[in-house]
Image (cartoon, rainbow, N blue to C red; front, side, top):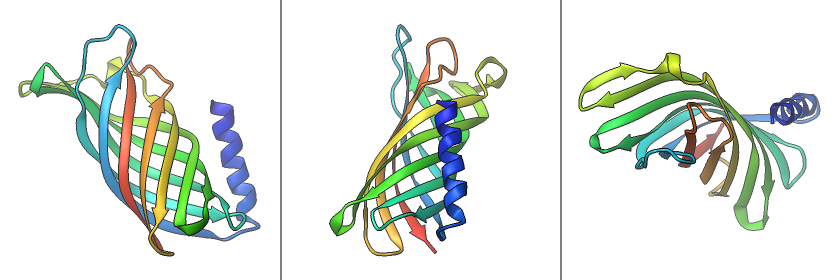
Length: 181
């Protein structure tokens, strides 16, 4: 997976010399959970994401999108007063295919770097960063619609390949808006 990420990044760099990058910003809502085999049952937690994006149009329908995002993730457990918070700096590199009438699909690898890891047990906060992996490799799959040349709306699912602790993995649904300058 790391090789695929590096290959996609090199392709993006190569094409920057032949095409124009369109920068932008994005923000949206995360619905996150922690999944895995034989782990306690977690419940979804609402978070957010925001950051920078760069679109590289290679053909009329095909492009590459690279992003730099802050993403608030984690899950709730036992009751609403107990939760795990995992915040990442994410770097997805996605291949995007544009269909007619504004619809698009995108997919690609994503690497995340852990910024914060905490357990909140009814108000008692525990820093767990030293006990979990510092990076997360995932596959990002998304669909969206371009409202015009400046605004996109999208839905994306990030499926983690990395167990950040024992058997636990991140599962993230993202919904948001892109604005291209």
